[in-house]
Length: 316
Length: 316
Image (spheres, rainbow over the protein chains, first blue to last red):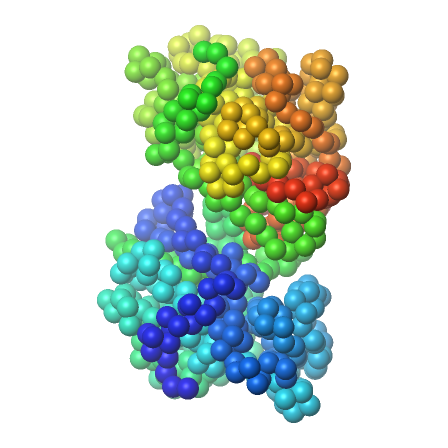
């Protein structure tokens, strides 16, 4: 499979439509007043399984050949991709083997189990996760679905921007968070095909700024010892996502931790919706750099809403 | 003005349309699985000013004669009605005089001020609130808009049920919370006119069960020393709302405090939306009495989302 074109993204959109929500694009008078910017929020926190990851996982699972169904799919993830893949596989009545670090929070383990995922625990290192996944794949013959470095997944994430551009044609700016770059590269591709005048901005925690450094130096930096509350954005860019980002993204902005928390609380308080810290990094860029967004119609993708309600950041 | 008929409710709906949200009706697969009931949630927590109160306040303000505009409106309230009335009056460029107890939370005072309300503080007793309001009304000539015992307000709240019945014709049950009874009586009237087979249930905290006792004894009991986290439901029924409720409501169910908190958390966690405790009492009735709702299409009105994010009940 090569770089997804518009036709593939539209096909993905039709393929996953029965299995995902067409999420709303909301605005907030009070956040508009506070920031002085014309902001619209694409609410993927209200997506099935609580995050945009359901798009990529459903597209990957439902584009598998019949022959691959019995053997199932596998991945290593402790986050939203694990839940989304377990759910998507369940919808197609196939097994999902999920490798998770033994330190993963109970709430995430339960969510994966709730969707019928079959969990294999491993030590909490990248090496252990990868080697355990190799063993699981060898034993089961399951197809690996990587969380972001997979064109089927990128194509699925790209469908979110199709919906945005239906609701608000030709916005000036779209902002997504960036971790591995699946949502960012998918969004950038769709915008390049459908609304090439739209600028694509990415938001990254300052404490996990590998994408920022990679982008501006045009040299891949892995994520090393990231320190941020935005636990969905700890990963490194991938070999498929990085080139798309270099070609189609306009800016990557880093955000301080306290701004991430401030943005998260602002959205909870004013919009009455729950977002996870990783989703708040986007509004954080606007709070820190309002001059970049003044007079521009800006769409923010609220990427997910899966957060542990026993650990709310302004309580700690 | 006499008991609102369907024509008046439809007129109110057209009158307030430019000033309120047509809120979404959402469902949740996981809450359906947990409860075993087919539930739909009317999201008035996403309403302007964060609660259904914007409907009644806008209807009252925008049905005033031109001659009353200069002198403004007044009320006593420390809750969502105060914010909604201040906002509605601001939209019509008229003053709103709000009497609030000096003990009202800072966050609520700031919200009323943010909408341009002119606050007069008083001692935190009903007697002081009423006498201060009398003084304010005498001095300013402002029209009093009671939070619920006013047909213009009841008619405004009744528009919520019109929207519900457009989205889901003839549900088996609609549940609203009951405090003063504005939302409950408005909902019951609309359902009686448009979908008379729909049963109307009300949910009330066990620690503030004056409506429950009044309803089943057919004798008015005032709310005395209510003790509940659902701070929007502390008030007594009114002389206009009680007769409507007696005639058109089918059941009032009381709910334990810990069930209210459990229901609130369930909605935050599974639906990714913020509701206030008073809005959670409705789902609480389903959690405590699932057998009443099994096999029924039930609509729950999530009445508001204004809650202090520094005081989340499962943290205390």
